[in-house]
Amino acid sequence: NAGVMQNPRHLVRRRGQEARLRCSPMKGHSHVYWYRQLPEEGLKFMVYLQKENIIDESGMPKERFSAEFPKEGPSILRIQQVVRGDSAAYFCASSPKNTEAFFGQGTRLTVV
Amino acid sequence: EDQVTQSPEALRLQEGESSSLNCSYTVSGLRGLFWYRQDPGKGPEFLFTLYSAGEEKEKERLKATLTKKESFLHITAPKPEDSATYLCAGAGGTSYGKLTFGQGTILTVHP
Image (cartoon, rainbow over all chains, first blue to last red; front, side, top):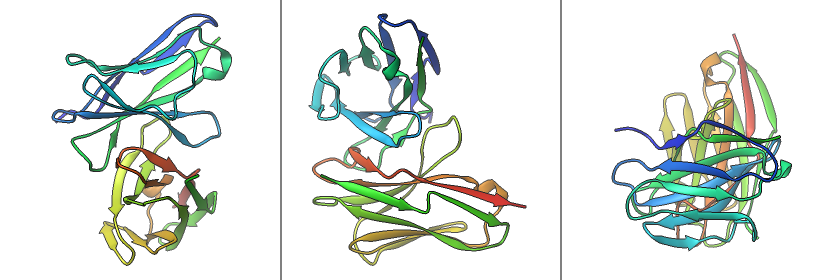
């Protein structure tokens, strides 16, 4: 049973470009969570999604960030017009229902 | 606001030297207290879930315990391969996946 798959593992974007981060949850998992880990800081919750629904986006920045989990395909975290402060590791986690969440290996975004 | 605080920030042990990591939490409506291990450049790896005060769980050299305000991760006779950052997180509200993480304890075990 493959774990949570995130791609790309590393992503470099110039300021002003768009970043798209993908997450395929574990088989049978319908709950997806996105977290951000800034340098020298802890993991911070961003958004909680189920298929075709955003359940809780209380941790998402108000502008430039969006997330989706379509009926088919991976969950996508989209960052428009990236700035240097967006450089971080972004982790996706999934769970089957209301149980512990399992994390992917993360996408490391660098904005130059 | 939910808060999770871990101490110490860093811990250096000799192989075989047992110790404990502390996690103090203030999480409204706590549904579960989680421990994860994170290696450099990797994602957090799930270790334990504790649901109620007095609960204990063990896995190899690790044992996690929970009180109403704190959780402890006890490491017995650690080995160099136990070196990692150990993360504590609390889940409140309606979802076990919406976690408030502590800053982590960086454990280094010297041979």
